[in-house]
Length: 518
Image (cartoon, rainbow, N blue to C red; front, side):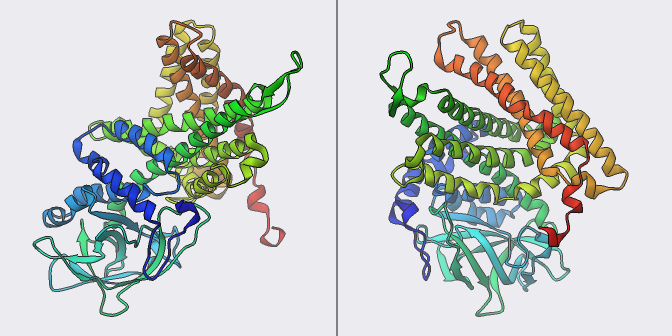
């Protein structure tokens, strides 16, 4: 219902059903799961169940809040943690991430919001504007806590906690902070969470903000929240992909159209080869993406004690955010196609799921920005060789099984990994020679190639596990995993051959193209 009722402004109000969902989520204890010392993959698995049911961004309120609480706990002073952390984790308040500005966008070094220290240590007056802030205002909780970037007088970026309402020492709410919601961005999807542009300090010498961490180290601290959010964005995309897969599968199982060439009886469309192709494509993309997000969640836990896992996760973050966002949107395209004309109507949820998922390629760093980070910076770090080592180890284990299905699939992954290594060496060499522009010209293709190779590895891991657990080859779930793995190797992983040729050719078409030729 909230998809047909966008947030309104003056004041910002959400559809009543959004609050009902959030209240139920909070009352069920889900908002406090991060405080239970549960493994991150367990939290991801729970999010997979709830998130696939609500693709419109409703649960984004609590995802942002959890990430804000984690950031506060990691870098906030004991006084700030004592005052603000518990209300964020028990569902009384929500949190946001306020980074972008109208003139700055993704270029955070260009933000202009200023923070001036007061006579009270740690307290600042903040003036400026913010744009694209999800959950910046609503009518569902008594307070909203913004994690906001601003520049201190030395022009360095620092991190601040800016509450909607000032919190008194006894925990009660005081006066309204001086910031103004100037408008709501009306989105094509994800209408279960508001997205606002707002200004601070319009009516005074500045809104009240409290320094988190050290002055001048705001970006470094904010990366904790940003990277956690990037995993959640990838997960959101994966869940949209899987929801679309299940919706279109259910339709295909029931829809009768055409006739069998043998019996002349009406046939359910799920039996047609092209429909199976579309369903398999959705399956391998969405389940592969989910496996990637579960891996990232596991690494996020283990990286607290393992430097190697920390490096691998650092390399994978751009892929975790971007690969599901692109390829699970592709999956949603095929979900609509399975339903034909019905998929394009509001009678079925697929058009909404597609619109909801389209945002994931944009927020928390666009696909292009993530690809520049991956190729321009991450390949030079220790994470890449460690990842290659792990993928090669899986290939070796698979080869030793001697299984007639597993061994050929392992060969596909082995070749893809070798291609990725060679392409990375060549592009890295171009960068070291000084031609960084040429190195990065086709970074989008590099990210997709690297991501598809990683997903191929994870599908091989799933196939090995399925084979080990299945004593009955007719067991549909496990056999379906093996069959999907084979499909991915032949139909998707094989595409990295062309990507490798393109990247190794150092094609400079995009560089040579003049602006007036576009």
